[in-house]
Structures are given as structure tokens and as C-alpha cells.
Amino acid sequence: MKKILFIGNSHTYMNDMPELARRMIEDVTGEGCEVFMLAYSARPLKWHLEEEYFAVRFNILHGGYDYCVIQEQAHPMPLEQDTITCVNRIIKLCRQVGTVPIIFETWAEKAKPENQAKMNQRYRAIAEKQGVTLAPIGEVWERALNLLSDMPKADLYYRDGAHASAVGDYLVATVLTKVITGKLPKEDFLTAFDFSLPDDEWLHVKENVDEETICLPKEVVQVIKDCVNVE
Image (cartoon, rainbow, N blue to C red; front, side, top):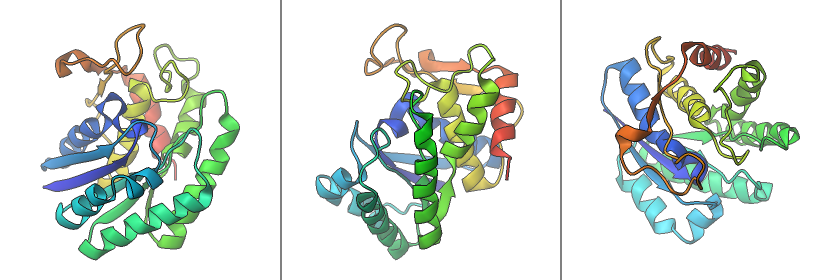
């Protein structure tokens, strides 16, 4: 049984991404997986460690997690030193109890693709310096974005041009699954979640989980898997 703690904001909780990752991990491993989440809208890691420090501390030190996925605010990115300081503190807590920290590399806004290189550099540098695992979501996102651009119903972005769509969060969950298990989703795993209501603010989510479950086209999923597999 794997236990995973997600720390972040809406880029973590959008479309119930941790639950999708859980199902994907269970599907490829045949073993149980539990996910837990400390994610609050528009909050950077600095907020977690100042306003909600005791929740972070308690969960890491006493939760018995195998992995801790650390997601920093993306739009806008906080000061680099704030990110470094906060990630290092979380890593230190993880190491006290043998939890594997995973750095969640975010993606640039649709209108500002030039920001991706800066994100990649920041999170790769932290991961390399600390000797921890990087989930290169932003880099996979950038590769897939070009390949999916001409395919119908394959936009990685939610309509605000910042958050992930159901397709985007399938990509996120796939990267995390590969990082944690070393495997990609099976050919018939096409499930994704879309918890937003049509033509409505995304904060108004579907209350019924069955209503948010969708099936992605095989060709879209294959592109995502091919992009994740690039070394």
C-alpha cells in the first residue's frame, strides 16, 4: 500500500488530480494506494509553512507517507529564494521519516509560454541540489502541447489559460505515475476527471463524482504517453 501526500494549490486539486493519480497507480501496479491533500487556492508554499505549518508538519512526521508531492505556486511564480527555502524545509521534514519528496514542476500560462524555461530551470536546480526526485510535468506539457495542438478535444488548458483541463490533468497524473512506479498507464486506462460545469466558473464543481468521469480518446492518451517516455 502506497501513501502519497500532495501539498500545493489549485494546480494540485483541479479535476481531482490526486484521485486520478491514485487510480492510475493502482491500475499499473495492482497494489493499493492512498492519497491525501493539503491544497488551497492561490497559495504558495510559503503560506503553507507560515499559516498552515502545523498541518504540514503533522502530516509529514506522523502520516506515514511513502511520497510527498510538493507543488509551488505557478502564476505568478514566487521569489526563487522563497521557493528554495520552503521546498528545502519540506524536504528536511520528509527525510526525518523516510518519505520520498517529489518536486512538482508546473507549466506556464497559455499566453506566456516563455515562462516555461524559467520554471524548468528552477525546479531542476532544486531537485539536483537536494538530490530528490523531479516530476518533469512542465517539460512533458511543453512537448505534448505542440503535438496535440491540431487534435480536437485535446487542449491541455482549462478555458482560463492557466489551469489544467481534464486532458492536462491526465498528463499530470501520468507523469506522477511514471515517476512513482516506473510504469505508464495501461492501454485501456482512458479515464479522466472534469469537475467543472460547462460555461461556468471552475470553482463551481460537480458534486457527483460519477458525473465528472470522462473517457479520453486513445490517440490523445497515446501522445501524452509518448511525451512522458521521452528521456
